[in-house]
Image 1 (cartoon, rainbow, N blue to C red):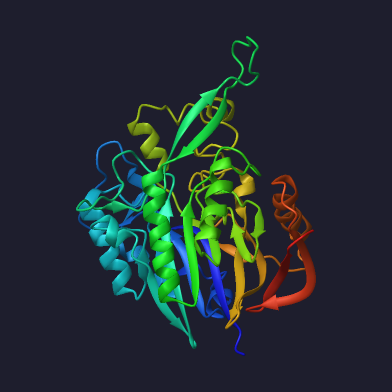
Image 2 (cartoon, rainbow, N blue to C red):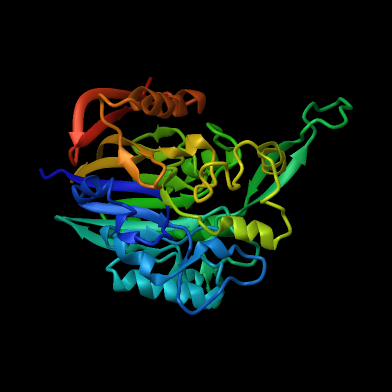
Length: 389
């Protein structure tokens, strides 16, 4: 029985003078897999600028798509796919297709956005469906409207201590799932189940303002997706690696972080909105955006994320005719040049990176255990993910 592998990474955005180098660090790992997935979080266009209120730094030239040919399929179900409107989405879809990448999660209608990509991997058929819980208002796809496949929720706020008057305390957030969105996503997953041997669902979700935290919305949606027939759930958006858990036989990667995310023009975005980046002190920036917020940080203006966001991983998932098998992580660190490279076992960062990845499980309150059995994948160390008791 042939064993096949899926390599999955989180958010991808390339905007640099040498885009061909952006993925060079993990290229051998990705090349060793039978199917490669990532979330492209931006717009590829040479014709369209950002629509009013959207982020200019996520609208990049099509030349930056050169290294994306390593991916078999990419999700566009995220909060930046529509930053340059319908024209930008059309150009992104066309550019990815030119590079041999199938796109899921966005399209000219909700039917197209939720249509699975079905790929032959050896003798197996693998279907991929994508949706997003994080999106600007009005960018969801409709029956005849372009946009992203949405899986929204409405937030309600309740008293932190019911029955007590406690002015100023943060309210408790309760997210109520949009039943219409869920009905559409559920149907797409069940339809994919009927067409394929393995169903993978990508979801853009979660809390990007805090490490470790897994929201109730994620927990609920993961349970629903597994129940609808998803064999594997791949989450992203937070730009911080999050925990991995198992729901029955379904691995759920709650946050794959990012493997490359270039934002050399982000400071210009803030200036255009009236924020005086040039005179702001590090304290001013943290006060304005939060410790884990996105802002041009001293020493790394092109990487506006918390230093812990440099710790990431490539997820490796095995499957065969009986379904999902072993799962693991290739631990990586994003260096000053913005390139993620696997961390060697005897390297100076091994304990730091593996310790952080392990803490994602324990502090996320998951029983999953990260174990080093001395294995490798694509010439790089591979850590096993074991379902705990």
